[in-house]
Image (tube, rainbow, N blue to C red; front, top):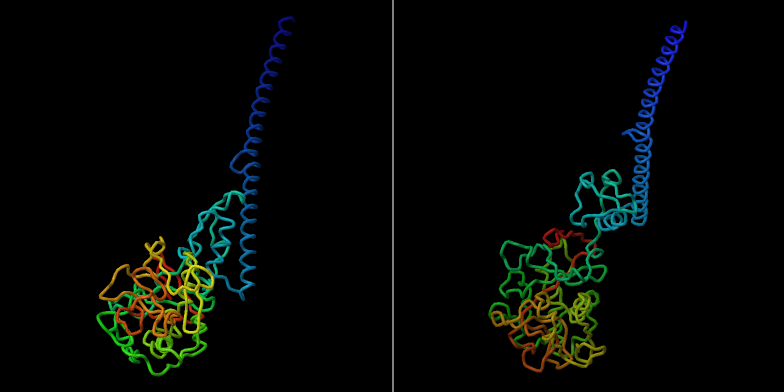
Length: 393
């Protein structure tokens, strides 16, 4: 009997141990399942993290789209690349420049800023419409003055039109471009200039004798090129300047697909405005009854200003394309009379001077200066600066 009870007790103990083992195994399995549900690839934590990421991405996407829509509403349903890049820079790191935006934005993947989760996002999923191109006048700033622009008139006749013209000034409506260098006086584009001007050497153009009559100068043209001087009838220097300001003389430089007018050189007022917007030493102009003064103080009474001690001059080949005499050419005429003398014009020379010196070098009849024609582009013209920093229409 006693043995039977002991046998039964051992059996029950065995059953209890097996049940315990089974229970532990079941608990381990349940624990594994629970842990997997919490931390697995599709677990609660993973799903919560994914939901957080998707919410952050959706937030960035919505903010970006709302900013784009707002800009489109401001611009009759259009947005240009510049505004688009500005918006992207608010929400993403590593945004390419306007010039380097891919044509298909599905090819552009960026990382949202840390404040927006730092997520990789395809920009084409946010917006992939067609850009409106801003006009050149809406794009160009003073920092672009001196940039080359691919205008069709091949001044040096080398078959390359990317090295002949540079952006000179932007008045907010029109962009003006200037010949990158003195124009050879044999150029076919100068055919209409035979109005009392005489050529010598390679570049020089001057007045062999004082013009007897004033050429027609459109007052609207004067305003366009910032020339406030209007009395061209009385003095010889005024009549010479009227040659430079008569657009009919310079229409050989006009490609009607892109440009409206051309004159024989920048006026002193536009030259100074361009120089100042470039961020260089501040210059000023003033007038008396025969022409312009120029200096580095307001209302100057000086006839000429030298920039020889200026670091800007030493490194500049835009306003001063040469720092030495080239084929007997010392510089170029500006389309403005000088306040110094009734026979003098304002000029820019290789020696850093702008204005009118007390030498003979700026009398209209001295054959040591040439021309750099200035072209006014159409107001609605569009152009893009390439990776080579050359603007193309």
